Image (cartoon, rainbow, N blue to C red; front, side):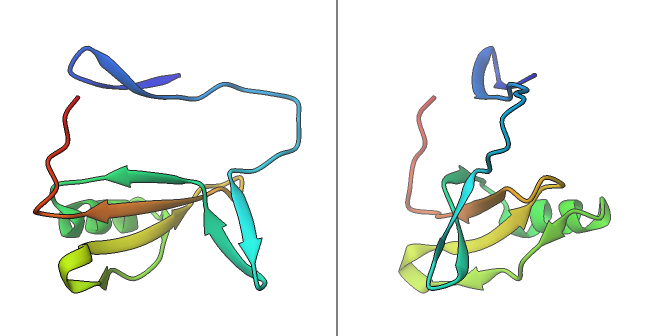
Amino acid sequence: MSLFRGNRPILDLIQTDNDSRAVFEVDRKKRWVITFYTDNIDLLHNYLKSQDIKVGNISDEGIYGKFFTLEDLDGNLFDIWEHKDCQLNF
């Protein structure tokens, strides 16, 4: 399964029989290995919550932007980042 932006794939999901996760721990705290970028973090956060996706609270880090994490059904943890001064080129 692939997620596209325009005609370019930006995420490919491949099924495997291996029991591994896209997450690691530091001081017993789960950390993500993948960050997704968004132009509207509030809209995305509200949408994911409405779909019963496990999301953390939005953290506003000032000049570093806004962040939240989400966890999928397999326990993978992902970071979502919005930064108005960052231009993403695809």
